Amino acid sequence: MTHESASGTSSSARLLGEVTAALARSGTVDDALGRLLTLAGSVAGAPVAVLVLQDSDRPDLQLVLSIGLDDARRMAVEATLGDDTDLIPTVARDVSARQATAGSFVTAAGVESADARPLVVRRDSLDLPLGVLAVAWDGPSALTEDATSALDAIADACAVAIDRGRLASLVAERSEWFERMAHSDPLTGLANQRTFARVLELELARAGRQGGEVSVAIFDIDDFAATNATAGHEAGDDVLRMVAAVLAESVRLVDTVARSGGDEFVVVAPGAAGTTVARRVLDGVAALDPVQGRQISISAGIARFPEDGTSADELLGAAQSALERARSRGRGTLASATVGAG
Image: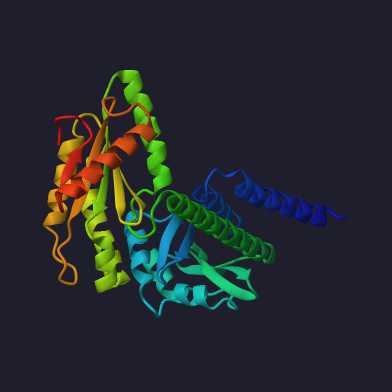
């Protein structure tokens, strides 16, 4: 092996090591892209290097990273990205073009020459453009064959880092969605019965330790079955959502409101304000506009820890009994399990 070929092999190995380190050892995608952009400028001998990305949700291009640009020139480059005649967007969309002289970019960046190449990943047999890596010089472009190959490799590494970051973000968003769905009622967006049961157990345990109070209220929409029968299930769903919105707006930040199934809702309210919260809910629902000519109202039963029970089952049973008494009194009525209250 000649000295020249050994030197080339050494340079290739060093480049491979730096690219691999940027991908494998950077804490974030931004860190990886920053290291790769610095490496691009270095191998090209270019004082200016920029990374322009296409937002995954819209076609606009954004200048996300730059080296060698002051604020004024960076703003000027950003202004060119909305111009359809600019060659940087053209390169981003034309994945077959591996090099281009970006005319308006050169002018905006205050340089004499530039080299730009698309960032592309292949998925489902299709080339997916992600953006552009560009380097620029104050004089004529003088890329060697090795530097050109190195820039191609760095551009591919940038594309991999961006794609990996977006896939990770997508996985996180889906995980968050599934987590939210596991704890929420899909129709109303309130907590579901499972989440409510867990919160109630935690609040009772805390109140037991601290000698505090907890109120549990059960709300039932009056004549809901009749609404479904006469106005239809879509109207019934509208009523459920309207009542849920009142509940969400009426409770305090420390309270938890959930749909417990059908036309029933439950609230756990730490402290002694449960009755006040329940009355506020009843008043809010009474003020709603009629649906299909039917006025909306709800009845409620409320029980308190520790007076009406010391476990979740006891409190829910006491609140349910109170709700039955409220229903017997008429629409839009509140009853309490505690003797002499409500």
